[in-house]
Amino acid sequence: MSEINNLSVNIYRDGFVESSHEVSVYSNAIKSDDYFFPRSAVKPMQVMPLLIEASMQNIEFNLKEIALFASSHSGQSLHTEFLMNVADKFEINLNNLVCGPQRPFHEETADSIIRQGSNFTELHNNCSGKHLSMLIFSKILGVEQNEYCQLTHKTQEIIKNYFIEIFDTNDIGFGIDGCGLPAIKLKVSNFLKSIKNMQDNSSFEAWNNVFSAYMKYPTIIGGENRTDTNIIINSKRNLLAKSGAEGVLFVSDNNESFVFNCRDGSKRGVDLAATFYLYKIGWISKEAYKYIESTLIFNKQNIRAVDVEVV
Image (cartoon, rainbow, N blue to C red; front, side):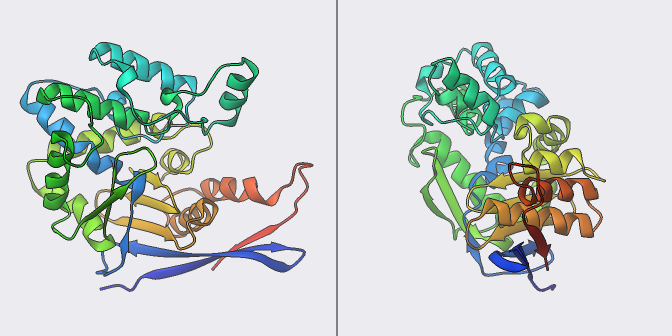
């Protein structure tokens, strides 16, 4: 078994280390007893029970819809308008979304909403696509849509049992995520097992659709200037990439898989470490890493103010 790689991300100002982030790199070649909350990085797996149940009922979702269900979108119009269209298609009342209103990740969109004197809504919440999928799942199952966020709801029970199957463990905990849905906690090594397990069982076709959805619609998965979106766009092979809150990033080519986990929960730290590592192993272009770096090293006057080192 390989050992866990640990990367240090150092930010230098005037030659002095102003801040530092420690990032652990786990691969499916290692066995680790470390636990983590994948947060939104679990979304590619979380949508699977819906796809499996829908297939059994001869209900089809296209790849763009699957991408939306497994997204952490930026709240741009391309996301919110599509979300409304999908809700109309499946006759879902968006007033039943309980993810809560949120300022869009996309700054220009957020600024435009403020200038118009409008309010941020549940549609702008980065998890609204996932919540829409839960409402659709409830409808397909013929169960009450209220309380779909509760671990005791039928949809969550099915998802939990599916997690036990693909992660090959009962050693799973659940907290509460920022959007109100259950937040799974498990060992990183069990999380990374899931890709092979899904390819080896009856989930294979559904997983292929999820993987293809990420490849075909990376801007739906995240959006403009989002790291997981940029990794997919700048990849040198077929890749699935999904960020999670508190410094998590999951990347897989369906053979090798990686979890990057920044110990201080820094998005900056995990984005720099992950793109640097993926560039060094030849999975993505140099431009993907350099783009992330460029967003940090120049100040508002477009003057280089800091330097970045990943070691």
